[in-house]
Length: 162
Image 1: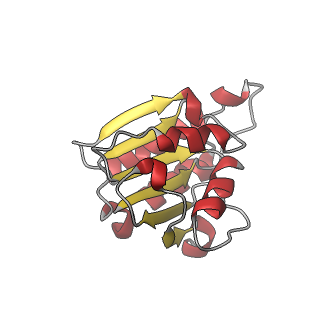
Image 2: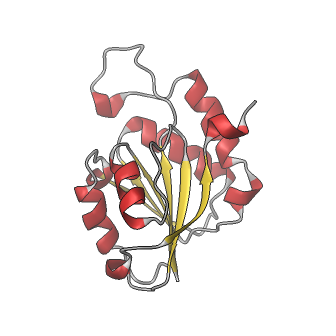
């Protein structure tokens, strides 16, 4: 059984005039990334591989998870292919994940994440919010066969943080 835990980057800053891919996390984003990556349920996932967009806000979000929730032995790769907003590059990327991995984290962007989760999951989600986490399990061990799976978990900061 393969599983993908999709994580949208935390809230980013619009304070500075920077190219989109260089925007850092804002204060709320830093808080949410620390909080969400510290949840015991997230720590229990034990991904074997982590794939992350090369955008600064996504790399910063991933950094909190690497520090708090991901085993030091996990394979980590940053890919321009995950700097995707439509979902087509993300879909292609998933199909090429090394078969030696069965549990992965993917850090990315909307609308790509919401689109792929709705395509591959068994529940419709209107929008994966910033720093939202959705885990989907697939009844296959071939990434190219991960077409429809079951959503095991949805974690959104606004529903967890008072």
